[in-house]
Length: 108
Image 1 (tube, one colour):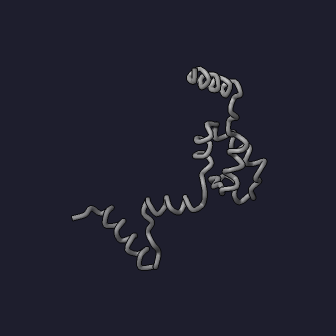
Image 2: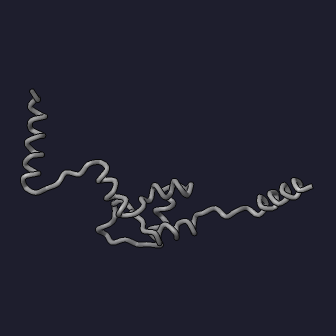
Image 3: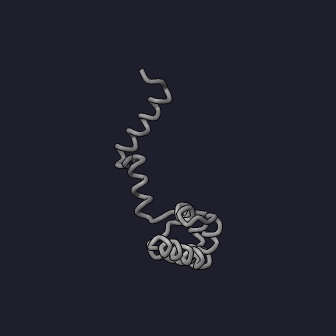
């Protein structure tokens, strides 16, 4: 037999379902978030920069309404591309030259 807390939770869930509400599973929640776009902290990690640095740039490049303040940034494809263009490390020319030298040596 279920304890009182479990029965209470089951009753609340049953009431929600009877009222036409749906229950989201964790997978469904992830899908909803993915459809919103890329989260800023995830992009910052991919870029190898501090999330605060990315958010600071986003605030200037893509100002949000006061209703959106203090909420998660979800970035669309254009915003993600702009962030990559802004923060992607440029290839160091010295490294390119070293690579060319190695290839030349290998040919000899």
